Image (cartoon, rainbow, N blue to C red; front, side, top):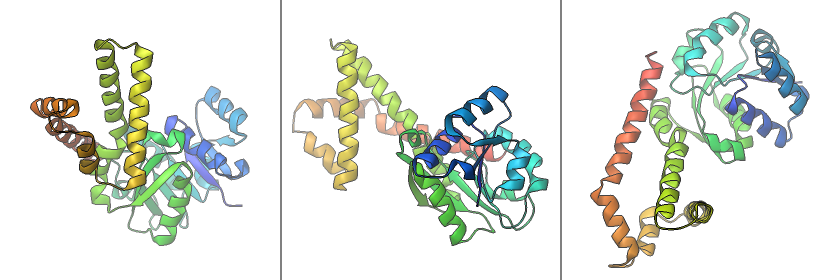
Length: 267
């Protein structure tokens, strides 16, 4: 019975674990590497999975998902590296960590897949991008897609694009939440009760996202459909342009990309 290990049981690690179980995975095939005793007991009781050491995970599993902080990746690889063997698949969900970084710290010949996840995986609407390492083939990528597809959509991209993806979909939910937060505050400023403003903004966001995905219409076209000449929306868009919101988003995403590159360089 092929086993999958999830090393790192933080928010994203648990999201992946719960998504696999919702998708029909047998808990008996899942291992979790978690050192904190209270957290380990919590996961065992909640999901009926085996919580073991990182070393045991490396020795027993065919596929290992490394869901750890970028700054902890080197330590984890040093710990599990001597226990890995050819034929295993290592899937990394750590921002900025390259496949070359991982391959240099584990035995030669092990397939590595680099992943950029995002937090909407919590509600099975995640966006994952995957890139192959030097020993990874289509079969390994298909396994990674199967693993991640339980909680969202999966897209294959060249690894050189991962830092840009980190800036867009990886950090992207925070930008959306920031916009929602700002719109709610504006609603309150305009005299609406906070609960009313919140419901209006969230449903508007949800409906707009559904229009984008379901219609396939370019966002510019959809925006123009709402923007009547000399109307209220036109007045609002003009203010956004005056305050250079579009340029601010570009600068923000460039900063996120640069930080992702810095993480890869260990700074």
